[in-house]
Length: 509
Image (cartoon, rainbow, N blue to C red; front, side):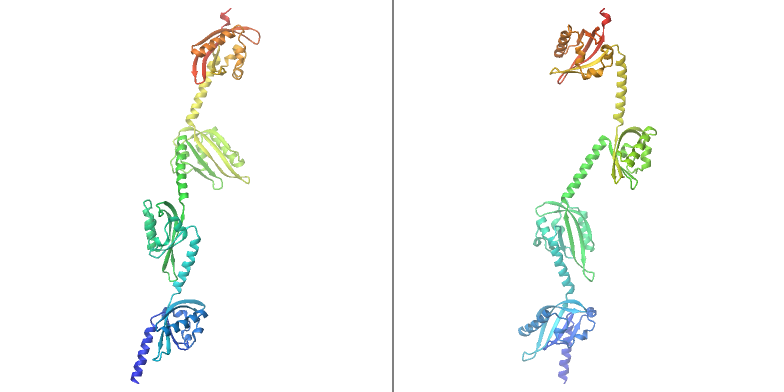
């Protein structure tokens, strides 16, 4: 009895040790009934009544038909081979499938007959689900054109998709177990961004940015990427997923756009051309930097509708601008006008304001256009006009006519300029002679025509001063004597004469 009790106690201790080895332990008799059962305390909530398993057949504890067959096969294998047999199975517990991996060992008597089987299993539900999710993710990732990288929590590559392999030239075997930055980063990779990536892995954070990577052949490319940690049910990071999109073409286009803008800005600055935009809905006015420079205002100056109007010189310019702007917004009429403004430093300058409108469904959405500093040009124009007026006044009072006569190498001729004094001499207006230069030669007396032409031809070839007295017959039939003198000058395709014509009939009587 003493030996029997010691053996019974030893058997109990052995079972307790075995029962503590796994998350789930079954003692199964030779009829495949559960005779004892233990589970990890952390899993007790999964089974509302653990004792309900005891005494039940294996095919009645929540196993699927296929898993039940796996159990019987594993028990028979363990019995026949005298070693433990591994198996995987799932249990339907409280309406939820739990997955296990374990091994079965058999206890036999001295005759080799099966007494009991012991199942020791670990719960691998989370692992199973993570593997399944990773497989599904890999399946999706393999179909996308974006570059996809999956890493361990430590940032070591565990999987890449086909797009990654095709784009970088690296296959999975070459990058497996390596950190992506050790393979993809190069001379122009931003170190600050690289450090932020490392920090995201270290602190289990999401991170997105743009960075330069390098392919296996050394080719540089830009990617827009996002890194996200993936957590399991207990909040542990199981892996990281990085999705990258090649934006090299877009990046180069952006850089080209920046260069174009810089060139345009510099061109506009040289040409003193700015721009403006007025959003009618928000009542907001926007100016370019050059427009602020024209107004002699600081870079941080923000214009408003009221301040814009006040910059126009009080009087005609301000009133005209107000009327044009109102007409544009209300009726969609564009404008183009030269006006005066008073800058932020009090200087009066001339500007050209061109405005266009965006109209939709009869409503103005936007007024926009250009704004150019034309002060130097306008003042030069005013000076020229004043000089022209003075010259016209002088030539009109000269007792005779000033003219510019041009003869091309092919013999054609014209009068680009004839002063109004020609009308008093010939009765023909200056405009008519400009349009029909032959009129002045048709008036020459027939007896003097050859002489006049010969002298013109001689001056054309020698560039000697042309001077001639000849008769003309007016439309009234009167005959008058004209004296003409002019200085020739060679042009690329002919000769131009600058001369003076006067009536000298009184000296011939």
